[in-house]
Image (tube, rainbow, N blue to C red):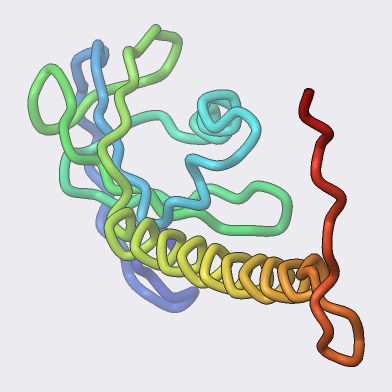
Length: 150
C-alpha cells in the first residue's frame, strides 16, 4: 500500500498486463546509509523477492534491521516497466540523493576532529618545549659540558 501511495480505504482499479522480463535496473537510494550496509546488494536481492515488477520513475521502500530505505527506479531495460519474477536482472546503483550533503557533513566532521587534534598536539608540543628548555625553575640557564678536544 505504501509503494502505491494508498490508504486502507482507497479505491484501486487493477488491470492485468504482460510485462517483458527485465534485464537491467538502475536504482538511486535516497540515503547514503543504504550503501553503507554490510552488503546492500544482498539486502536488495532479498527485498526484491516481494516485488513482481518494477516501473521507471517509481520509488520502492525496503525494510532492513527496522529501518526503511527508499530507492528510486531510475532506469529499467527493456524501457518503462519490467517483470523481475524468475529472472536475473543486472543491478546498478546511482549516487544516493543525499551523497553530496552526506560527504560534506563527513568532511566537516573530519576537519573539526583534525582541528581539535592539531590544537591538542600543538598545546602538548608547547608544553613539552617549555619543559625541555635549558633553564632551571629560577630562570638560570644551565650550562652543558663541552666535548673535550685534543
